[in-house]
Amino acid sequence: MNAPISKEQWEDLRRESVAAIDDIADQVGLPNVLLKYQSNAVGLLETTAIRVLFIEKSRRIGMTWGLASYSVLRAARDKRAGGMDAMYISYSQEMTREFIDACAMWARAYATAAIAQDEFLFEDTDPNAPDETRHIQAFRIRFASGFEIVALSSAPRSLRGKQGLVIIDEAAFVDNLKELLKAALAFLMWGGQVVVCSTHDGSENEFNIQVQDILAGRSKYAHMRVDLDDALKQGLFERISLVQGQSWTPEGEAGFRQDIIDFYGDGADEELFCIPAMGSGTWLAAPLIEARMTSNAPILRLELPTDYLHKNKLEQAILMAPFMAELKAALDQLPLDVLYAFGFDFARVSDLTVGSLLAIEKDLKRREALCFELRNVPGDEQKAITRTVLKAVQTRLVGAAFDATGMGWTVAEDMGRLFGLREDPKGAGIVMPIHFSETWYRLEMPPLKAAFEDDVLAISADADHLSDLRAVKTVRGVPRVPPLREGVKGKKRHGDYAIALALAYYASRMQWREFDYEPVTPNRGRFDEGNHEQDGFGQDGGGSFRMGSLRRSRGIF
Image 1 (cartoon, rainbow, N blue to C red):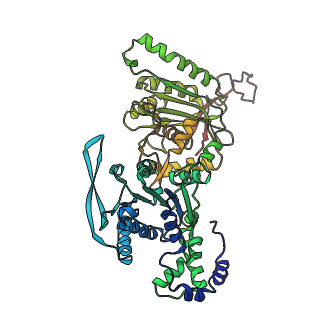
Image 2 (cartoon, helix red, strand yellow):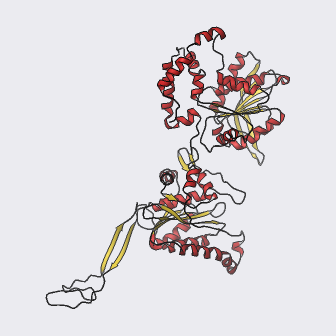
Image 3 (cartoon, rainbow, N blue to C red):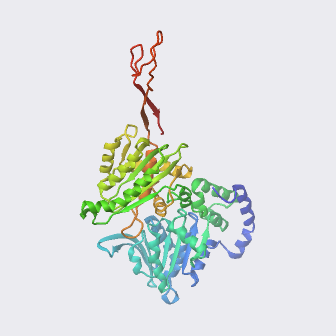
């Protein structure tokens, strides 16, 4: 945790900073309703120059409460005074209800004329599928000015037909921030405003990407940052104490601060101090992946035309020949003094088939030796390619894990006939069919991540493979590839390489045993009296017969 100062240091700092609080209270009366950072946000938005404001914030510092006050000020005004509709969007219904309640409180405090506070169903229609209409529960306050505050629990497409102020709260956690921003930024054409406010959710989250663009000068949007210490310095705990009817003390505030830090534990940097976590949400950070791209293994790609199956055998063979020749040349270069493991992720129509061959070196480091990617390749050709790879390393192959989902089972089954099917992880056989489940991802993905972190895995440098590995997300605590596909139409990827690599690494850790026959070297010596020497057939003078020995060696786990 990188909290800037200790509990004791905080006590001393706050004791000094509020020593003159009584004098200040005598001059300005009761504490201002808005804390300084809340007031600063409202002040920035009141200036016509600020059209888009991004706010990085700590958890539970009341920033949404402050933005509710600004929404009321905007919606209650006449149009000539800058009045406009205000729309609030977040990822949960509880937050939207809380926001409307805060707006109602501010409306009463400002003595503005709010006609009604109600709930209604908002129709969200996809123009590409007009029959699929969703009804979204929404909350609304209508003002005598003719404007209203509308709070929605999601990001409806109908936002594109609206106009006014848009507040996207906890933006890092909405379903698709990039698309939501596209719709919201259209409001600027007619004098609207956009506020994007959030705690962080990882360095590669779209919210942090936008913030970094602002800080780097690539974006002209306005920016605010309020972490827990900023909020405390500007009176957060004093306000909490006032609301709870307690007296403020520096010791009490320091204890409050430390309790919150202890509660969030390893997540305190991100949740409280606006420091986005590396790889949060995204399972592997890009710099870590790139650091492991030290193998020079070939990556072979084959894409067949859509009418491949309508061609005659000769034409099909001509289309396959260059790839097969390239594959044979790559396999001929493989050393046979190391062990190998193989992973195979099957696809036929939408996605890629990917095979990854890992060499297990003497120091047990896994180094990628070969990778192939197949698009629009029929099942028989996929089997032929896979069979060619496995036969080339058959004598050194310790395991092969195959995606056995759907049609992938047929490839796993046929390879199992040739190289031995293993249906029990602790059983015999080389080919292990994998039926993906949440349990499999939960148990078998962490070792792959540890291999990246511990530098015991080397893969080839490739932009597509980097993208595939970054596509793995932590969903409900389990790393997996979400359903969203990336890439241009007709060439989309779905984290295919990441799955093949995970299968190969799993296969490299499977329990295995080697059985080998070691023949006895013939000894054609003579038979001497009193000395029973072995004859050329391995039969000794005592009449026993020894053909050789079966060597059994324990493998890698």
